[in-house]
Image 1 (cartoon, rainbow over the protein chains, first blue to last red):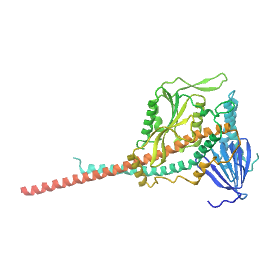
Image 2: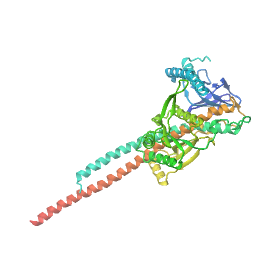
Image 3: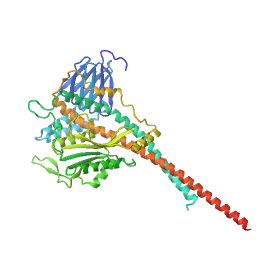
Image 4: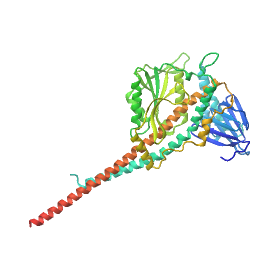
Length: 145
Length: 357
């Protein structure tokens, strides 16, 4: 590997099947479980669980933005490196809107049926948030969150 | 004695068979190469999950200091009374003893654990067909509870060993989401105390010449990151030699370069000697990571098993091709002898006929 520029983050997006993305970037936006966060070069070491949402990687120039929709993941941040473990990552154009909407319906249905069970609620919530994140990231190119 | 025409026909038929087995061998070799690549590409993820879990375990106590509770139910060990066995076999035959071996190990496991109730989840068509013939399929009855919800209730067991589910076609594309579903169902059964332990039976495939049949313990999690092998069958030296031979003739590397940069980095994932800021409390991190770990163990087992299946088929077809060649040689020799005998006989007849004149 050639000498990386001093203010660049090495970003790696790993899924169960393969390493999906590996490049230098100036900033990364992550959908942590407790809210979105942005990581720049020199960030303090951090570990976080990711919820459903978009991972946005800002490359060196303005058009080098790549966006991936993830629904569960884990991230390790080191000052010069960001490694994202995602159980599944989709590009916005790969998202099947129809299926996402079906998923949303299914989630809402589960939510209604959950009754007293806390577990069923959690599961329903997870399905709903996953579907909503998918719809949101497929819907528009400019993010609104 | 067979005549020349019959022999010629037989030779032609064996030649045709050889063509088929040769083609199947080449197809398996190509598929093996792809499966190997896939298994390799899947390794960084697994490594990362393992290293991050290891480092979390080192930093975080398993027991909550105040309440004394375990930080995650999957760490809880109970006496093994009910066991879940995931059997990963192949989808197709013509792979030598591949499927038979998997089933043999499965039966051994069942016999080695008498008195325990064993649930089997069969992955792969061949294993499922066999197991279904031997063991009853678990019966579920749908019941409606007081809230008007439909719930599947398991009927009384018909025997100690029952088949609780099968997953046809899972190995064909190896969709991570379906493996995820299986992992979740395993975990929920464990948490609800329907099972006390879970094992996977599969063919491990590190490389063409290093493979073995293992019974691996998945749940409960005792030592994260270390394979808890409950039993393993190593192939004999002879078998290894055969595989190596077949691989060489198909142009497959014996030991693929397995340390890519990504994998080296993966080992270090989450293990840097710095104080991490944990965004969420450790117990939450465990709750998110452990199911993913179980998934990665299963996914790993499946990718390896697929590669091993193709390797087994390649080896079997290579043997078949060699045997066919041998048979053709023998038959050709035999045919030539028969033809020569006929010619000699005719000459003798002519000569003796001439002598009688």
